[in-house]
Every structure is written in structure tokens, then in C-alpha cells.
Amino acid sequence: MQAQGSATLDGTLEILWQGGAIPHNKTVFGAIISAAGGVSGRFADLLGSKISPTLFFRPQYDRATEVYLLTWRDYATSDLVSSLTGNQRAISQMLNPLVNSARGDLDTVLDKIDNLTTNVQVAAAFDQFSPIAGVAYTNMTSGMASLQTGNASSRLGDLRAGVQGFSFQGLENLEYLGANSSRPPFFLASNSDDLPGMISGEPDPRWGFFVKGNIVQGDQKDTVEQPGYDFRNGVLTLGTDYRFSERFVGGVLFGMNAAKSWINDAGSTVKLDGYTLGIYGTYFGEAFYIDGQVGYGWNRFDNSRRIVFPGIDRTATASPAGGQTTAYGGTGYDFQLGSWVIGPALTFQYLSLGVNGYTEADSLNLQVDRKTTESYQGSAGVKGSWTWKQDKLKVVPHLWAFYRHEFGNVNPATMATLAQGSSAFTMESVAPERNYFNVGTGVTVHWSDNVMAYLNYDAQLGQSSYRAQSISLGLRLQL
Image 1 (cartoon, one colour):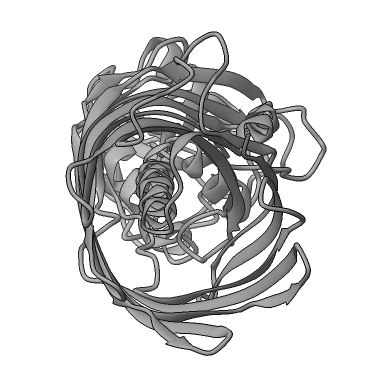
Image 2 (spheres, one colour):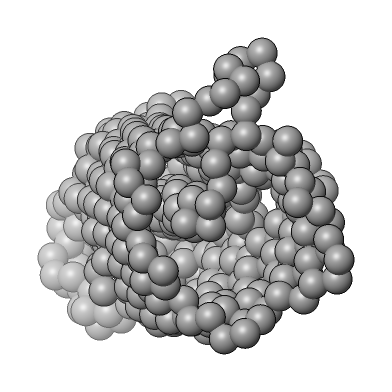
């Protein structure tokens, strides 16, 4: 529109986008109104300015004799924000001050977001900015700690039962940690009083050695705020112990930890390799016992964050490290009722985890702050077994059930910024449900005094969004 004199603006400007290729941000379109005598005022309202969920037409009034249109990004419109989750809104709020001044790679990525045609697609793209590795750290490290303390606790139970010498359990199963392995967990074990050629023919019976390996596989289901993921945790525990008296045994252990989580459908993963050093011990009477363990671990993570949406296919990587401190205590009492052994048990485990801050490499990099977590987990339950004998054959089925409660804040928020520069934003992780149950059953078959086989199944129940289970099969030979 051209005016011969001057023009004063007011009212509503309606813009009709005809479709076609989405223009770049800050693309200048021709004058919509010009007046040789000058233009004053502004339009009170705009209709039809939307090009895509994040790109809009915006009238410009900086020229004295005309008004023209400019494309302009807005990543925090009420229409878009209302369709986002809390974490996606945090990304929206972090990006919006940057979107119209972005340069280089960030501007390239934002151009691809501007080309998305629905709020759902934009929300999915915002998810790609999230430091998603943090959601798996706690599960992986707490899983490692539980497996290591479980192996030490199992060893202490063996010692109370009179086992001596060298014990292998579950080592063959560690192959299962391979990402391409398709077979289910399988535990293979052996036990002997001495190692021919390595330990003298008459070892000191007060000394003992053990090696145990095991694996747990499970999944965290999708929630509104957080996509689910699958995980696989495995440990190898080596220890040596000394029987200081008839009722007290103490030892030192060294653990190797490996885990992997598959975080989203785009192929993002987190791997963990770690080591644990600790001490353990038990004091027991005829039926009563007290177990304890403390340890410190070193962890190294390998993050692979896939950034995939229409027009973008990249991977950001990082290798943060951290440490963890664990303490475990347990007590129980075993009642002997004929062929039955039944007893209550109480346990408590403390975990303090730290993952150092890091800056990603290779693509749309995030600078993530140090993250710390503390877990205080207690449990109460009962375990029982029944023994059936026929000549040298002895069959022992057993059951256990424990109620567990988490007292700590085990999944705190993750703080991050764009490495290119941005305000800090916070990603809230979904805290695991605090109450759940561990139940299991198994059977041990003693074919003779020297040959024993066992099969165990354990499951974590009572959490709507989390599942973990394990099956163990083993053989022990005592020579």
C-alpha cells in the first residue's frame, strides 16, 4: 500500500502466509505500507503472523516512510509453551534470549527447528538439548554398589556356613555385558580348598579367597517428563579374608564394575567402567549375625548423546569421571526349626556419588555442572529354606522377600549451559519410587559333599516405572 501524503497506523494487521519454503530468520520482506510524507503509529494487533511454531512475521517501524516485514524467532509463545513438559520449557526459556542473535552452528540448528511444522516436533527437538546422561548415572552406580555389597554379603554367608579356601562364582556370566550378546544371564562357579600349583598343599584354613561375578538387566519406563531406558549392570568382586576368631571374619575386596544404558530411541548411550576397593566383615553366633562393609569407588563414564530430528543427525560425546563412597550394614537371626531355617534380616546401605562437571565435544555442546547424589536405603525382610536329604543327595529350596525404602534424594536436578554461551537451565530427573520389594526364589542341589549346583531368580517389584530382574545358575566344586 502506498500513500501520497502521510500515514498513521492503528487497528489490526492480518498477514496471510501462502506456504512454501520456510524463510530464514531475519529475512526482510518488502514494504507493506509506504508514505512519502512519513509513517507514524503502530498496528495494535497482528493476525496470521505465524510461519511455523517458532518463526513469525514481525512488522518493522524503523524506517520513516515505510513499514516492512521481517521474520523473527519466538521460542516461548504461549501456544508452544502450553504443549511442552517442564524440562522442555526449561530449554525453551534458555534458548529464547539467544535465538535472534545466534550465529554459526547454533543458528544452523535453530534454522532446522524453524522448519518443523508442529509443536510435537519442536518439543522432540528441545529434548535433544537435554543432558540426558544424568538420568542413568544414579541407577548405574547404585546398581554397582548393590551388586558389590551383595557379593560381599554372600561371601560372609558362605563363611558363616563354614566355607573355606578359594571360590569362583558367576565369572562366565560377565561375557553378557557385551552390547551384542543375545544370550540370557548364566552363572558358572567353582570352589576348591586350594589351587594346585598356586597355593601350597596345606593352606592356612584361616585365610580365604573368593571371586564372584553377576549381572542385572532391567528398564526404566517412559514418563511424561523423561523417556525410559534399558540398562545392564555387571560386577566382578575379588576378595581375601581372614578368620580372626571362631566368630569373627574380616577381609579386603577389589571390585570391577561395568554397565551400559540405552537412553533413547535415537541411540544415545552411557557406559560405565569403574573400580571399588573396600573392607568387609562379619561377627556371628549360633544364630545371630552382624555384617558390615565400607568401600570407595572410581567411575569413568562415556556419554554418547545423539541429536536427531529432521535436518539434524549428530552425536555429542563426553567422558566425565567421579567417585562414590558406600557403607553397608546387615543383621539377622536364623531360627532352626527341624528341616527349616527361617529368619528375619535388616540391612542399610549408604551411597554418596559425585560426577564431575564436563563439556561435550563434537556437536551442539553442553557444559554440565558437577552432580552429587546421596542414597540412604533400608530394607527389612525374611528368608527361609527347607532341606530334603536322600543318601548323599541334598535339595534345598529357598525363598526371600524384602521391603525396601529409599530415604534420600537419589535423582537430583542436572544444571547445564550451552558451551557457546547461554543462561543456565535445569533438567529435573524423575525420582524413583521410594518403596518397593525384592523377592526371589531358588534351589540348591548338593549331589555329593563335593558337588553343588544352584538356580536363583530375583525380581524388583512394586514400582510402576522401573523393573529389574536376574537369573543365576551356578556350579561349585570342592576338591
